[in-house]
Image 1 (tube, rainbow, N blue to C red):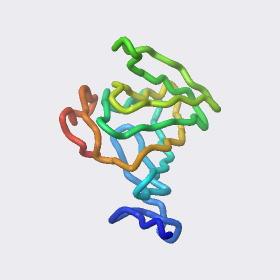
Image 2 (image 1 turned 135 degrees about the horizontal axis):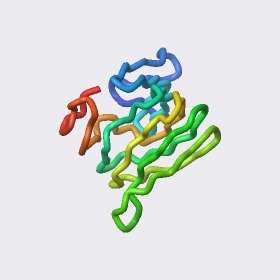
Image 3 (image 1 turned 45 degrees about the vertical axis):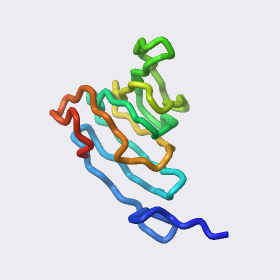
Image 4 (image 1 turned 135 degrees about the vertical axis):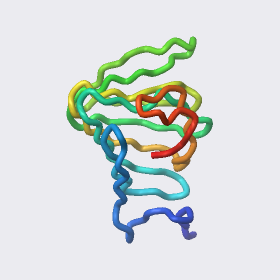
Length: 133
């Protein structure tokens, strides 16, 4: 049985792709029809959009720095969770969340492959309502 990668996806024979963002960058090192792997670098004092995903489910592992994860709980309240190196957390589909770097932070994100499944609710860079990089 052959597992075909999604159109335009990366696989073992394709070089990783860096995507510059206003808060840092993402290095997408694998993207298949079943999962995606990224290394995300967030500059100190910067944060990603407050967002949610309809389908995308993700988990993070902090490699360095201090990440403040804003994550909606089951009751709809956004909790702030500080994660240092080795800290992990799952962000289930449908939950509002935001990554904020207290210090320059590098993390690994493993997720389902729906990269454009993002609803930006708030954004420090004027990208609300878009899926623009």
